[in-house]
Image (cartoon, rainbow, N blue to C red; front, side):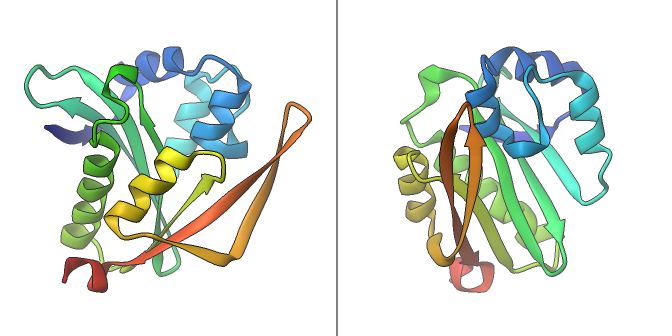
Length: 166
């Protein structure tokens, strides 16, 4: 079991240490960051009042399992920077729990009901996780990102919270 906690400075080093290269950083944070990730970059992104960042903690021992964020824009909420730092926890449903907790947070604290996220098309495990929660691929919207001479395609996935809570 996991819980979401406010992500603050004392957890920056765990996040920074978990990002090993430019590809990992692009997959985690998109083009807003440059490798290596620094406290200054994190401060800058978290200074945006429309962004909420969470530390994902193991309920039983309080250790950090991951990181996730919600970005509010216009009438929608965008989930992002979803990372399971503890590689031993990957493939065990933790990502699904994280996404459900983010959706519950929005339901209980915000008015936005249109939720979206972007995920690279090669990240099959994440896509399956998001689909399991109820997200569907929005085929009208794709993003291309250049990473180390490669072109990566990010798929956009959407979910309506009113439909989801039923």
